[in-house]
Length: 264
Image 1 (cartoon, rainbow, N blue to C red):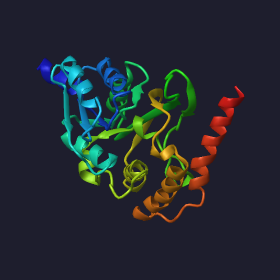
Image 2: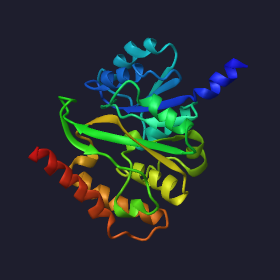
Image 3: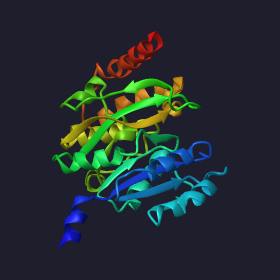
Image 4: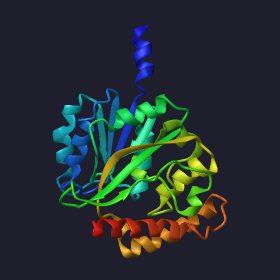
């Protein structure tokens, strides 16, 4: 009897990290998962056949997880293809993604996320993120506090910070995985599909979930342009008209946020 109660109480959470030549940051990422206080975590690393020391670092830390870390290293068709592989490998009820240069902001992050699922009818849970200096993760460059989703928010440029986004695995099985035709904004499109198109109930927790190192393709000038074009295609793919307020809604808060930090 007691075992069943306990088992229900601790829903298994699968965390997926996609890596490629991440030797400089991957050990920070892995250790931030290792030190989570939540008792039922499965960790999956999908490596894209790194040519640096990444795989050796994963191997060296693997035993600390007592069988809870699984990883593969093979070529893939880009980051979203690798994410899909990881989600399909997951055996937890809840799935989230942690990039190979990001870390959890505290040791109790997964505890708080699991608690939000347990105490609400939410199908998706997300929280706050800070973008930090590549070499000094305590130096915050930008904050992303998204607030609670409201119907139509995506059209105004709102979206949850993807590295803080958790949902039940069954939702990927039912509503589809990341669409690999998008090179930069498949995460935006997928979250929009779950929240806006299929109306899944969601819960925002006002907690810092992830520290994200600055960098990545979407933060370059051409990355921004391509990302904005893909954002518009994402609306079309979800039978939404082209929203006029979306791009200003995505861009202006970032500019204001950066200026605020500079003035501090």
